[in-house]
Image: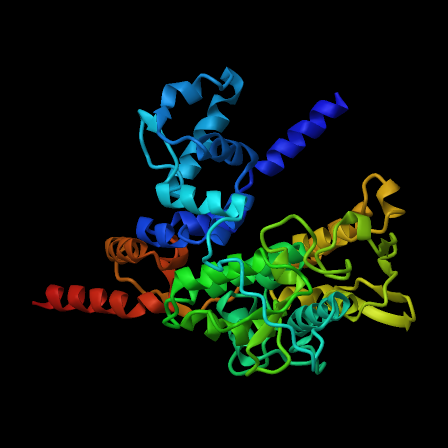
Length: 469
């Protein structure tokens, strides 16, 4: 039974598409055909496909002509028909397989390029052009690249959790700050310093790989606004994902949009350059793992680490012991925990009404706080059932309900109607505008939102002038 359950879980996870796949499916056929002209892009996209989709592609790759759709369908057992149909549908939307009910074949452009990627043929340089050896300067080694990528990435995350809290964390570049705002991860209220949002806190719960792609998808959305060629941008990201860690590559054959990307990718920690004007660059582990399942960071210090990296112990008296010396983790805890003591490898604090209220005011929800505590629970706590003390979970939710119990809305109170008919007529009009917040038929009065006042007042004035005439 346990083996079957494990297989089912694996299948469930495999059915969730990579976050880039829905974005690619929204692109036009011409855009995707241009994208498929480079072998590195075809290889990278193939890596992102689900297992059955990859199997279909490999079954059609070496065929010189289309095969009847019924022939392929005959290989599918009845229980797998729905999965097979869904896989074909995804390949249709990616224009990897042209839509046809009769014949099945690969897109000719994709097939040619993917064959070149597998066999190593072709001279397009789509996998990057290695830079000539420089005897005067040795390139940064893998350890140095990992340290650089980790420092850049944690600078972004640390700023997210510390900005607006009275601390002065290192500030990322202007481009990174704009991307954080554009993606809704941070927000500024009336010129105040940027603060993390509810979406931003949810972002911290994800793995570093998912965090990176969330930002890159926003970057892709901005490509047209910045007058960048989307195909060039995607090609460069796919090219980076197929490069070798620790090697230097030349920038001379990059396109206009790709050269413009270098500064942004340096800010995100995806590439390293000795200086901005350098004609060579080295990809970091963040970029070489973009389309693989390998971890994008050399250590599990990211906030999105899984259960095996748990470090939090929560007691029934709301006391928290966090076994960490990582400043980023400590900063995340400071969003909803009142910190008391800090030792070299231990942080002690308490979950209080004020600390939770502070988090709620920043847009963080009770469920997100509980989810973070569960995700990062210490292995010793995972022996408990339930994992977190129920009293603590309930109290966090009660504090949220306490805050949400009353809501204020600006508007106008309409009263002193001369008759029940007039009251019902005006109330009916306000309901059509969907601006009624409260009503009392016995006292002939109701309260409407401010944005509907001009229309309601005009309606009453027209009624009054009509009765007078």
